[in-house]
Amino acid sequence: MARDCLLILALGMLNSKFITTAFASDVDTRLRYVEHQVKAISESNQALQSLVREQQNKIDHLEHVTEAQKQLNGQLLAAMRNVSGVPMSRRANAKKDQQPEVVSFTAVKAIDQIHIGINQNIIFDKVISNIGNGYHADHGLFIAPTSGIYLFSTTLLHRATIGQPLHAVITHSGVPVARIYTGVDIFDSGSQTVIIQVNQGEEVWVRNFDINDENIYGYLYSSFAGVLIVPL
Image (cartoon, rainbow, N blue to C red; front, side):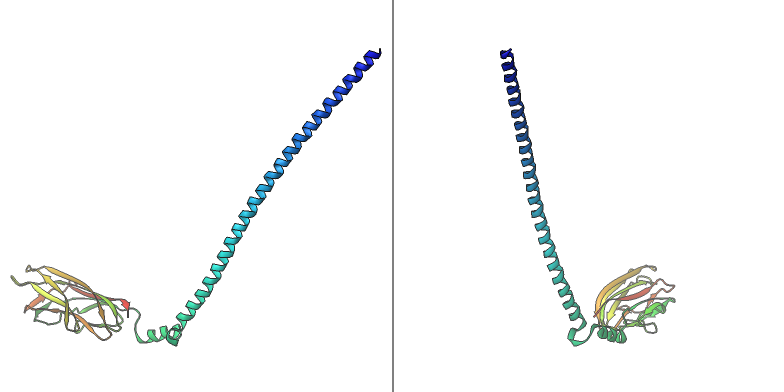
């Protein structure tokens, strides 16, 4: 009987020791897991803090750049408003009062022009448009109402006599700029386009060049046009 009691007591002690050891092992495992999680969270927080600092530095830089740009824009605007001590609005209004902002014209020949002499103006008698009133149909002259870079273009339909070509020329203030040639056939045509600087009051026109007794068709086949590209 005593031996059985001793055996039961020994088994109980062993079981208690096993339970205690298993519990301790489980607690240690859980503790290591918690420590691992805490470490991971700490590292994540550090990374987030680093990212926040980086973003804040970028925000601070952008705010600095924006402020500097605002100051520069203000300085540029003030300079534009006061070039040569004259406010921009006053200069713009003064220029508008003095010179047209848009200059362009298109004129065509409605009737034939015959027996044209050497250096005689070619007349484009029908005015399609004349913005700025620079073209004068009576003499076929364009007189620049404002200085600038202009584009001029002309097309001539030649009513040729047998074997006679047409030589014409776009002329600026008496100086030939570009020549127009047509062949010797009755319905030959020639065209020319130029871009030139013309000062206010200077004249541009198309004239017969060096062959006498020329004929040019009307009926809207021949034209002369110009437009101000850049005011100066």
